[in-house]
Amino acid sequence: MRVIFMGTPDFAVGTLEAILAAGHDVLLAVTQPDKPKGRGKAVQMSPVKECALKHGIEVYQPLKIREEDSIAYVKKYAPEIIIVAAFGQILPKEILELPKYGCVNVHASLLPKYRGAAPIQWAVINGDRVAGVTTMRMDTGLDTGDMIEKSEVILEIDETGGSLFDRLAVEGAKLCVHTMQEIENGTAVYTKQEESEATHVGIIQKQMGNIDWKKSAVSIERLIRGLNPWPSAFTKLDGKTLKIWRAGTEAGGSGKDAGKVVFVDKKELKVQTGNGVLSLLEVQLEGRKRMDIESFLRGVEIEVGTMLTQY
Image (cartoon, rainbow, N blue to C red):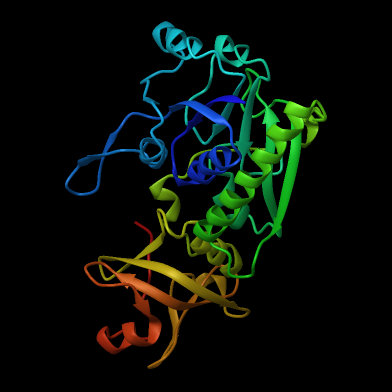
């Protein structure tokens, strides 16, 4: 099929590669404008742009896809289908109705659950046992279109937002190619979403990582995994930021001591939460490298009763 691909982050790259490997003709890659990144604020291309250029595909980076000039630019390619994977902008009706086979979105959740941004991280934070990818025919709503196919994955006990991101990117790529084949063959089945079952999630913001020790150990441990690798979960220790990358949970203690170090020796550091105890396993103190707790305790002196606090 004649394809226009719209996507921006790493999650979308595997889908673009899979479409190309399946023999489809990708006419154009549409992605977000280049942005400054890092401390040096050097302008960087999106992963999708890098992938497209590697394959000799023309790249278009509209500031707003809804503007008339952007719509006209896309229309001139006369695609049979538009594939969207984490593009980052809402498509106007004129583009949605342009291709013969419509616009198909690869969404990293089992719709209608987790419509919107960051469904992957929220699946971990909320303690879901099953996550997945859905292909859907896009309409003017936010992830409200008819579902076509789904692929499920079981979360591992130590699943992080990063590891689930990678797994669902692979699943999404495979599912997209299969869905395209079904559409082209005329065998695709379109199923309306049950609105009563719909849930919505917002974007992940850095402040979400600020640990509230009054919450349960279980919920904090999930937050740590869900926000790994970005923005990470963090607390304040003696005025410095302490990132917590990995932790375990135990029952016990009193919620009135939330945030207090209740046990420490050469190999372990345990903190009381609102319900249960959090055992820190891998941390990173401001200005230092990420390390396991035993290595950390060799260089930092912490006593029982020390308080970890929110910013």
